[in-house]
Length: 437
Ligand code: S3P
Image (cartoon, rainbow, N blue to C red; front, top):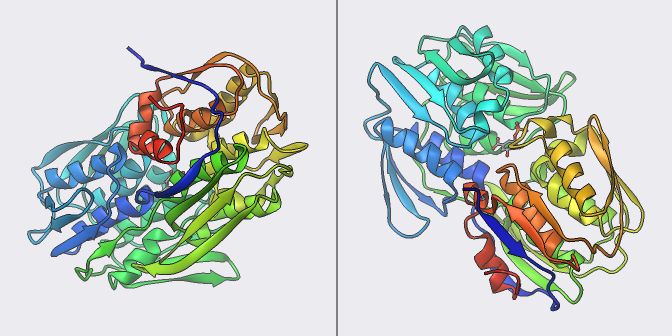
């Protein structure tokens, strides 16, 4: 049975402080690269979302030991390396990051693997990693470039690869393949995608170099031994985004969101907040395990300006587009989101699903091949039952939208928020959101 969540408008503003839970992208990488150090490390502040737990369970199956020493801190022990039986099946759950990153690592192991996942993950395209891995000599078969993926481990050779899409999952997959390949592997991107893998591998002293030349943004990596070091994980700006937008659009709100990762490859939402003239501040900047982090204060903003998302900014806010679409409903004019066709390949076809739901709410939204256009409408006054399609970011975006809808809303399949953000409702309650139950 798909669960339903009934929610309605709040009459008070949001107020107070919250600490944002750990970044999922960085958490996946801490487990994966931590497990390749052949040592014992402490990971401080690991995401407990199901996606990151899927990654952790796979490494447990690969012989890596872990023990939580507090709610989000654990000791990861890979002193015996990663090992496996000849044939192993790994369940990636709902997590595209787990699937795509691990396919790079598993390609050069001395055992065979099958990667499987849930219904939504099994529909997502994997050609973007299968194709370049095959160029490196990997032996991979799939169900028409979708899961299940079968990998026969063998030795790989380094390549120079120009990624046709800016994707940190593709880049990190090839970096993980490159970590075990002969010769150097170079990945080029025209637009820089999130660079957490590069930052963490440099921190763990891998043989890696990254920068920009006349051909684009490059990452060069060679077979490396990683140094065991403790890793602390910053808060997730993709999770903070729901609170940032809620604070900006709900009258009388003023909230502080603490410990948010502000790596420049992730802060497209901050640039859009500037464009939209949102009343916000970035406070207390610091660096944690080589990642930048800060507190973000957001106040209700009466005159929100329409904004345009296009070009190079897209990979810097790709996961925040559903909640930025909610922000656009409150802007004074037409906001445009384009160059974002890859939204169709996320946990749902986010262009289609957002347009369908917003139309149900009587909002003016026009679907385009690579995005949508929304005309802001201050007052939303329509009862609706919205489908999440089990897409966690849609569920949380619709929840925020419900807080300004005059009429009651039902969100179907709301439980899917647990894949990324099980703490969402508790944090909403903490800033005095009365629509949580
Ligand atoms: C991620 C990269 C992004 C993002 C996903 C997490 C990562 O995907 O949408 O939620 O951790 O590398 P793409 O790299 O495919 O855009």
